[in-house]
Length: 203
Ligand SMILES: C[S@@+](CC[C@H](N)C(=O)[O-])C[C@H]1O[C@@H](n2cnc3c(N)ncnc32)[C@H](O)[C@@H]1O
Image (cartoon, rainbow, N blue to C red; front, top):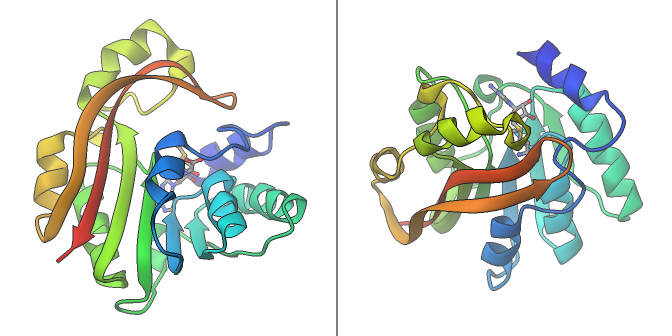
């Protein structure tokens, strides 16, 4: 897994672009600044954007090549972020440390994905936000038709709204939808995709 991501991130250019994910950008627009965590943040496009807004940014990812690119992007924008190279089950943040956590295309195996969502919730303050966008289970035929849109080809790594409701049952749902959208994110998310978007506030 680590080799796959290091290989992708050692190519020239940014796999998902330098521009933040659009749903993240619009979701953060009216949220008061604070501490934000970006798990599985790859080359850092979202984390760096949040830092330019004035957020205190923490990120982690299993890829050291991803971290190198993220730090280059941070330098380019003259911001600093705290970025750990670590797998999900190796990080440990404090309880209630964050005002927001942004999961953008953070896909994991069926055996781990709900557990990871539960672990993250403990890091979030009461009233804190989860901002989530990832491919839905209905994405598979679109990906088959156009591999350039990217995303896992394993149905179990994709999400349904029911799974999100269940994983985040202690959250007020501010937004939860499944949408077919046009993606134009760097080299690896290009074309029509089906995504789940979720913003939840911890009760
Ligand atoms: C599709 S990329 C998304 C990157 C970034 N969030 C973005 O939107 O540009 C998925 C990322 O998940 C990371 N990843 C996969 N499994 C992981 C794990 N167990 N722990 C930490 N990171 C992981 C990969 O290294 C990769 O950077």
